[in-house]
Image (cartoon, rainbow, N blue to C red; front, side, top):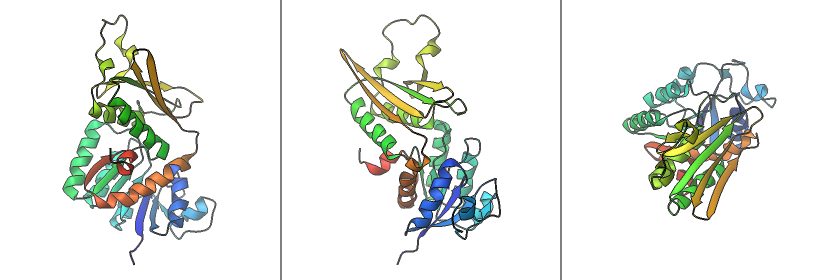
Length: 268
């Protein structure tokens, strides 16, 4: 019988971590290897979450947890530390699932190279099923409609712009085709920044306002018609659980970086 995969959760007391830990404990093919957090160290993670003890104490030292050889690291922490966390795992040839946003193209290029050198997999992206469907359907639309732009919104306190979901979407669509909207037919009058930031050639517009839930939409325009595909989050972190656990399982089977849950769910 196959042993359950040991999962190290970094950010175990964060919004997504709090939903992930109980799901791992209930999964027959997974086990909670370690729970890393800056708060409540030494306390049983199950009790810290208001439930029954799980036999895993919270700890603040990620390196010590990785030295005990989990089968996968799942990271939902902060843009300032996620690159270091991934590097620590890859040094130990431990696969990684990155749910943290705020990484850029150069970061992903370096992660892919390090993962291939280590011979292990890394999965990154928005692990909501409906966000994956947005990416999948938008790629299909981009093959037929050459003019498109992306708008995303988040709470005023979100530090990274654009969001990881919007950045990843722009890069995925750019691989399908270069957007015609990136080459305006008229000379612009006024600040060019008003047209958004060019991410892989795709105009992306970010809103940061109090009271805003995360949302991303891509708008395709053709003469006389327009198609909008939009994904909204309603503040429930459990939407990321099923996709994250699927990625933790699938990441065991490949080498290098795979970006986007849609890449794990769909062939093209």
